[in-house]
Amino acid sequence: MKNLLVVIVAIFVVTACVKPINTEGPDDKWNGYAKYLKMGEQIHTLWAGKHLNVGTVTYGIDDSANFYVTYDCSSSGWLISETHMFAGDRVDMPLNKPGAPKIGHFPNSANHNPRVSILTYQVPLADLPPCTEPGFVVASHCVVHSPAGITETAWAEGDYTFSDKGWGWYDDFYYNQDFNTGNIIYATTYSHDSLRLFHLDITHESVELILVEYVGNSPGTYDATAYDPESGLFFFSKYNSGELYVNQLNEEGPSVLAGYLSGIAASATFYNENYYYVDELVNSINKVTFSSDWSIACESILDTIPGNMTVNDIAMSPNGDFLYIMAIDQAGGNELISWDLENHLFYSMALSIHDGVQIAFGSNGLLYAIAPLSDEGGTSGIYVIDTECDTLTVIEDEIIFIEDPFSDMASGPAF
Image 1 (cartoon, one colour):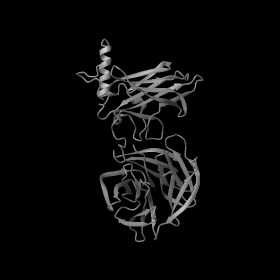
Image 2 (cartoon, helix red, strand yellow):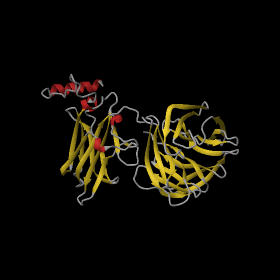
Image 3 (cartoon, helix red, strand yellow):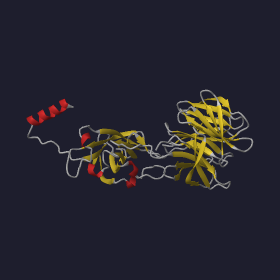
Image 4 (cartoon, one colour):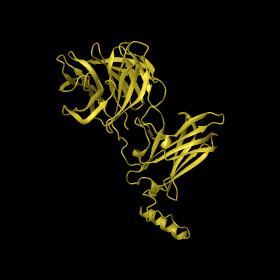
């Protein structure tokens, strides 16, 4: 650092007629970001229709204490007719309950007639959250048109995706907050010939229906749901007939058939690219692997649950060392069984909880149980299970109101 200061002084003496940039002032127009002034720009690919590279979006800080965002489609020939850009605290980003961006509420928005190939937004750094805490995120969306007349929606690629069934990215620009600000669980119901997927944000006490898929016109129900946060894939099985379906929640397409399970799956979980379920007929723990296109490649039996148990649900621990099994014993009592994947050992503890309980690990690593509070459905209570101390805690005032009891639950994404 001493050598660097000497060089700066020497340059100032030689070029005394050049005034340095004033990065201080009574109003602190730099808001703590002056130290990033010379760190260069961040250039992101502008993706149209999820797979067409139509240009770039550049983020940077200029000498006048502005954060700038430049859309540039000049090299592709595409033109921009509409832009929506958000820069600010992540908690203030306009989102709906499932986490989809409400681009119409982005504070920097405009229609462009005539269409443009290059456009820049400038936001004074003084109008952004302070650099020290919390910093800010940025999301850039636009509507683009090809020379052949094709119209697409486009997003600047970022490090983080929105937590919904649509698509799009946002990025951090010297951002200091923890991104795992919500504790998410997915839950499903099956009613009126349709599978319904709910987004449960336990931290913010919200439940939102994010997917309804018609799966009727044939006998049977659907269960054994599981979610893979790495790929964004959501799995579920058709009870009795064994079809395993997969849905890419980050896209708009319907669920597709991955193949057929060898057993009857009424509970499932996912870990490290593998789907686990309990065969309801024989209580075996089955592991399903997949090929590169997410079709079933192989299925194997790992172990069998001892005793005469009726399994309600299963959940894999975040580090993959224990499989937790919620079951009802012969006397009608609820038990939480844990199975050691390495040593193939079973452990059990009794739980005083309503029947029909479903379990899943939240994105915060805690094991949650949700049980209907009445046989008629309509309300469910939320519990936290301490897997270390074998205790059950009711979350006070946490009641979920739904049309039907959840048929299954799955760990959700970090959000």
